[in-house]
Length: 636
Image (cartoon, rainbow, N blue to C red; front, top):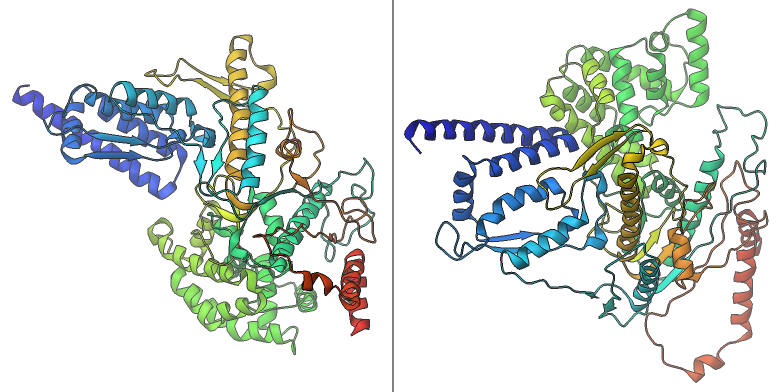
């Protein structure tokens, strides 16, 4: 290569490197999948380019001696193209271009755990890479079906589920698993599936006129999901009461995040600490919405709705009567609520007096201070952290305080702190999808999606919503046929409606649907293998069942132990309660952690007093909650 050509190649390399760096920085800012694809395409182009690849590979060869890639089953064809362009240079090259010992490659993966199709992950890439390492790099293929995590009972049900799926042609390459664990034996339970009432039944009926100020709207589907969440929360409480398990030993998993919010509410009502380690939206936190409403009211004093939310928040603690008095005064004087407040309406009310004392100073500060300084002053003078800590239950207190701190941090980080006024900061927060940093607590029930639980484990795992509704046909689908050994896709087509797929694409559509079904089974495998000792499945009877057996049904066929439903005084949990929260009585079977020695003396100690105590306990379980409390109070 002459000097001029070398300069051109170097300049081109610099341009591509700049594009790569810019894509990476954009990815860090927005964390978008499109930016990730651009970054991968740029890296593939850099390593496949005839003029630049030698220069890049020479430097990689001089720097890298060992290459370890974990979770390889989640690799996409585009990502493999980048690796293939690099590793192919070592095929039969002995010590590589450096003349030293060859590069060692170690790839770890499990196609049964490939659950990232939305990122174009293809488990076939793992098989192709495995064959490449064996043939081109003279490597070895090592397979392991032995675990040191799962109890025997968990593995027995797992083996039965996937052996049956493989026999039905829905799964492949599964071999029975073995375990080093012998004690405890473990348990797999199926909670009673929440029944769906007949059309027009008490849950579905509208129930007449509803006072929207005092009675929340009740959606029939949400009622059923709330019953399932209550049942799961009762099961968790029963395990904790049994002893031997702490909240940090329990996980609740689901394919979607929405049901986890209902479980969080049910756990919060019972005072069970819980945490959501996965990232969630900043504006989804109630504490953040309250403070953003306060900033909005300071930036726009005539915005009565934001002002009312700020007054109602724990920052001031106004009651409904306080707001009604303020609204009547504002209507009489035809002024904004904030102006009426400063004129003295609703005197002798503690919350409004507190707002009158703080509001003028904050209003003046909003006109002069940047968002962070204003928020810092509000949090300090308004004792925001202390007031929220006083009203939020202990189970959610740490998350609430972390959300307040995250809002303060975003006032300095969002868009490089370019929003110098509260008005622009509020608009940017409502326009952008800003994520809270992941929060975890050591001794709290972990609420996770199955994707978020990848690589984690717990002594007891609850998997919810295991009878999902049949998915609706997608209105727009991207079909891609990209074999792992191909340099580019063989076919890429947009389908406007899956129900009206063109005949020429039906084979590709069938392959896409087969891949989705396989991923559902992979997600079931991931969820089941998180449990070390106990695995509990819950479900709600779907309105329209998905084709094929559900996860709950697969475990039932595999011999999982069914927990018998318990009926309270109002009937079964899913039949007669519509507006109020259901009361579910549930006691999970006890699992002996180890063999207990027989004690004839203890057996003879079954006195009349002990029998009476067990009888009273059983009667209290049969009673509804209110009656049980009354009976206990009367006995005291």
